[in-house]
Image 1 (cartoon, helix red, strand yellow):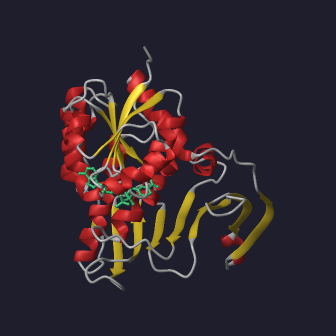
Image 2: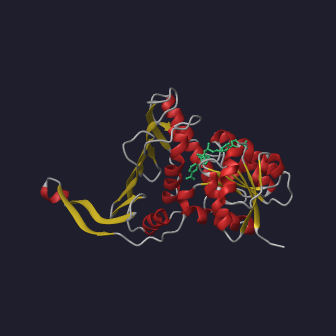
Image 3: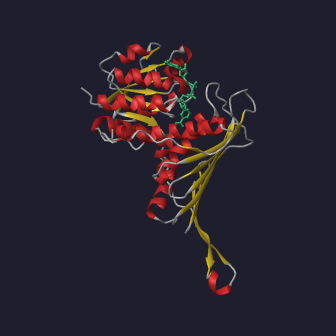
Length: 349
Ligand SMILES: NC(=O)c1ccc[n+]([C@@H]2O[C@H](COP(=O)([O-])OP(=O)(O)OC[C@H]3O[C@@H](n4cnc5c(N)ncnc54)[C@H](O)[C@@H]3O)[C@@H](O)[C@H]2O)c1
């Protein structure tokens, strides 16, 4: 009898097949079912993995006692409903980002998972990306000094989503990375956006975030851009970093900075600028999704919270909701709601 974690994958459109492939590759997991309500999507998976069992009936997957866990890669609007039913059926859940389509729904899932002692993990893939983890080490070790600001661009042409705004689609990546790097929640948000192509679906958004430590961040999100950019600049009091996910040198550490010298003794400010070495460290070419799947399997087995945990997923959803409130308020600053502490003080899983 194999002790592999038996997983049912729900939704194999664009992203789901990547989950299937990584669960197939992971030695600790076994794909028990692949489920999609679209037979053509299942047929595409079958061509690649002919031995996998497929079905269009998700209740068949949830009702199978052999299945330990469900991985959900369906549209955002269905995450809450499908994850809730999976948890109610006693299954551990990995749900693609964002955790749910509202904070109320996300809280409901957190509560249910805690009550049932089940893993609820949002798929914030970038928390498993080697360059992201290298930058996190630079920040955590103090190498960059105080973090003044972070500026990030996540833009390309497409893919326009009919059911969610660009913020719900792309911001989970940057908000989860910022939350992970800075180890603090943003407190204020202001944002502007525009619906350029589909009426009432914002396809560009410019978001500003303020953090308790004083760090500020700017996040540019767009489905409408001439070329693909995945570029983040972190500017600290000691050093600066450029993280470019599309580059062969994804992390570049700049020993650069500016300082003010002896302002009192000269009666005027004297600036000094430092432009030192630029280091481009070797970064392991590991596939983040395989690491993510591995963390989920480990969490199911041991009960330890995964790195991409449900509380972080809830923070991301709360931040996107603050973006929406700011947009509704004409771009003015709004506070990011804090999650209820009674819920978050329990077990970490
Ligand atoms: N982590 C990442 O980097 C990343 C990248 C892309 C997408 N995603 C996430 O993956 C999810 C899916 O996105 P996508 O682009 O693959 O969407 P998609 O529309 O291409 O695929 C969704 C699939 O779900 C199926 N489906 C819908 N409702 C279902 C149901 N009730 N039961 C079974 N199947 C159902 C659809 O038939 C479709 O095949 C989204 O949450 C998205 O945010 C994550």
